[in-house]
Length: 324
Image (cartoon, rainbow, N blue to C red):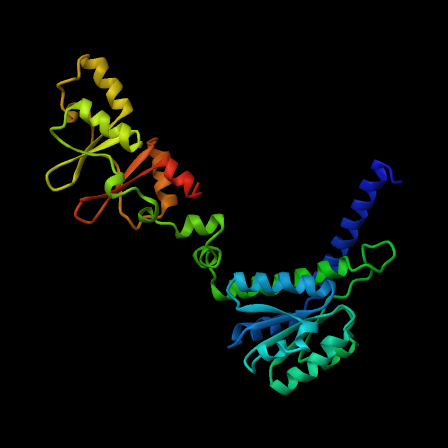
């Protein structure tokens, strides 16, 4: 049974071994990586990442990273490839094959078949003299001197090295393509960044019957009834053209009572906040949130190009949409 100190020491050795492996890999990068990136950028089809075993797991991650950063890619399991999935490969594709030994039977078999199809074949191995490395169109060397495994058997440092090479390819392609935050968001619409960069004010605003709206001559008690019914902590005061001229909030109510006392026969215009903040419907919801934070307000109106009321946002709406 290992002591706490021994467990920490083991973990630190793993880190040291893998950091050393990555440092050495960085120093041996050469024109092969440059060529691989150039081929991937020029590829008219997709990058077909394939592997088996631990390399297969790393391959799935590399394919996912490529696809989400602007380089069309998918993972093809090497064993399934030999039972029909090779039909997914076209002449315009590039096959990126991962095998540290460079001798995986499934991949060496795929190599010959891919050459018949006419696709380019890039091998990532730790053995430049292996069959896969020798017969590929291009070889990327991820050799490590030692695995983090004390038996030097379990793929650890070698799989980390392969993963980092995959990341390096993806990031180089990303930068070459000028891939932006907006591009990333379009491929991650369900993520936090996607919600922030794709959600517009008009997508989550309250509109129609959900809006608390009153006319300028509405008495305060009636305005309060509208506020309570709609649950936005305010009511919007509009003119005859349905253009907002003010909002009446809980704070406005308290200030009005403090000044006037009896408000039963007071119109809402006497206590409203004039010239309320408004934005266009195409404004990003995250920008609306920033404006509300800056202005220290909980609600903001949405108006069209003519200034007519379209909707309204409450800070709670942004929270519910997970924009903030």
